[in-house]
Image (cartoon, rainbow, N blue to C red; front, side):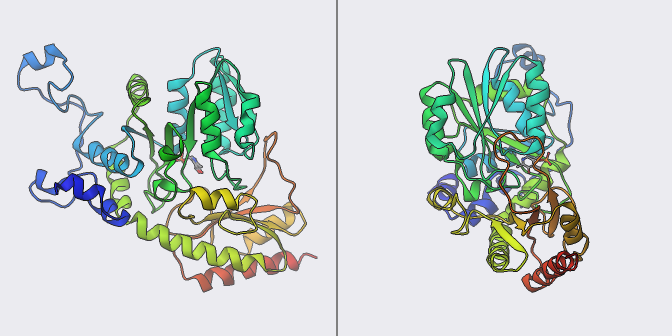
Amino acid sequence: MAKDETAKHSGINTRLIHSGNDPHGYFGFVNPPVVHASTVLFSEARLMASRREGSQKYTYGMRTPTTDALTSAINELEGSAGTIIVPSGLAAVAVPLLAFLSAGDHALIVDSLYNPTRRFCDTMLKRFGVEIEYYDPEIGAGIAASMKPNTKVVFTESPGSNTFEIQDIPAIAEVAHAAGAIVMMDNTWATPLYFKALHYGVDVTIHAATKYPAGHSDVLLGTVSANAAHWPQLMSSSEALGMCAGPDDVYQVLRGLRTMGVRLEHHQKNALEIARWLEGKHGVARVLHPALPSHPGHAIWKRDFCGSSGLFSIVLSGGGEQEQLAFLDALKVFGLGYSWGGYESLAVPVFIGDRVIAKGPYEGPLIRLQIGLEDVEDLKADLERGLAAVAALS
Ligand SMILES: Cc1ncc(COP(=O)(O)O)c(C=O)c1O
């Protein structure tokens, strides 16, 4: 079997380790070169004048052997026709929306989405004349009632940011496609390992590679992958916008990808153990983790996903901001900081903000936990400190 064929039939960790570059194409070095480039020289003027596709593999520093190594690894994981690399996860949201929406179009956007995505929709997209409508994350096939003749994009994110609602992606995709709309998904939480977005009807899948692919809280990067029908427009829009990322960041993410499978397994195991333990704790009203049978979206999660990552939220039993902040300030192992997907545990206060539908009800304040790779008993002891600080207030 050829190397490519062997890779396609291998297990996920084998693919994570071997996809993207061919060591024997670069003197046998295991890792691809980090190519710092703007100018690429042509051997003959004829090649420059022809500007023919394929006249020379690399023509400018936007595309290099380093970016190719990452995009082909992601294409293999996603099953996508092509992938672009952009400087952050938020850019990975903005670029496809700009690529596929025009003035006069209507876009249906899930209400439980990453809040900066909402800001992008409510500011830039509205300014460019796109009609934005937010929908209930639990709407499923009911989204049919919101489709309009000018609906061009249905944007999904599952689980929802901070509140972890699970969307019925196949049902939504069926309705959207029947109406001629494109389905996009921010699939950062599950990664392509735990949710195969393109197999479930998504056309364009988005990742903040800053999170699990990078895995070490030291780099920002985004990827956007598309199926064959949507790849040409995604690629040409990204080129028109001049979107690219620095080679060191691209390399860092490819390096992170090699261990993402084993890291995710450990995040999953630690997070599930802590989520189950928190469910029985005095002071915790609810644990918002889709892999728990108590979660309202558990059945759909179980049907479509093949794993869960390390991010979930808890709802405290009553109280408000004072309790929320007391819990967080008592933590010694969990850091207080934004982002997630790195090796270390983090906690943040959740503010529902300007959502219009997916606002609760919740019994008390919400706290989002990113469960890292530390020893689980140390994390439990830390969370006990948080709960004790809340109890001490009453
Ligand atoms: C679901 C989701 N999408 C996108 C992003 C944006 O990623 P970045 O921080 O790389 O811009 C985040 C960041 O927290 C996120 O949680």
